[in-house]
Length: 424
Image (cartoon, rainbow, N blue to C red):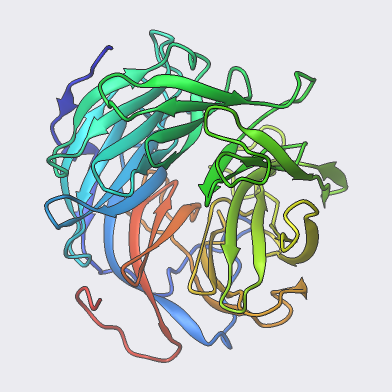
């Protein structure tokens, strides 16, 4: 297996500072500015710390506790544009979330490191690779024995040369989205130096077939199959006697979203969650961009929103609610403690109450809790919020922004004064 050296911290591309940001994340006026927060919201995001990335776009993020007991965040880079690079992963020590420290970076042969995941034990990280000059894309496995300075254990590309856009790690398996086949490939990583493909699942070949994302929970894999909607697959739940080696179809939910007079499927991300009231839902995000989208053009904005799918009957999913922000497009999601955290691209980072039974338009029901415009003058594209992905970790809300890097925040009641430090 080909390995790549661990690069030293690339300080010319990254600027660090703690706090020092306006808690309301002020943004410029114009169509691309994040929709303003409602002054009547019950809470607000307080910025605890920042890891600004100014050398390129930032992609996905994962926060975890290392085997040394310290906390870390990994952020990827996205280089599919002029003047940016996407060939590295940044390692942040966030043990003091008010003062994140860039401890190292890992450089690889890639144009885009779109996704990064860490196993539950905090011993292995998986990063995705697209656009490699060698055409050997796929995934790279990092040994986290020294989490501040990961080392490359191996890479796996033999059946994934088309590139991998997203993954999910569940036990000893990596569920990888293959750009080339538009199938889900299952890779056994029980020996991280010798990963092996052991299973595969995909819908029949057709025009427009595209798999974007996967999330695995309790033996079910939830596939974001773009115009074919959400497909739920048994990989160990027992509903269809599926296994990681032999995934089995359970059910499917297809929908169309109307945006600017056109209809789209564009199922981009799925997050399964059962709330405290025992209601089981899928939170499903679209991703819609206008033709020739230019993230430097303030008039170009994405579309798409969060569809809420009732899966109390897993074989008959039913859409029951939505969370939509006019003038903005949703990206990645995280749901925990009956709160939906959404990275809403130009709409910023948002927290929404998803307790109890969900029906209808959640925003019109005043379920929004807090909004933060993740915009900063210290950024790859200054003063342009484009929130990519959120994660709740130890009571803090971490988020990556495509233009400005890592954000560490907490939700506090509206009207409270700013505080400093970790405050866990």
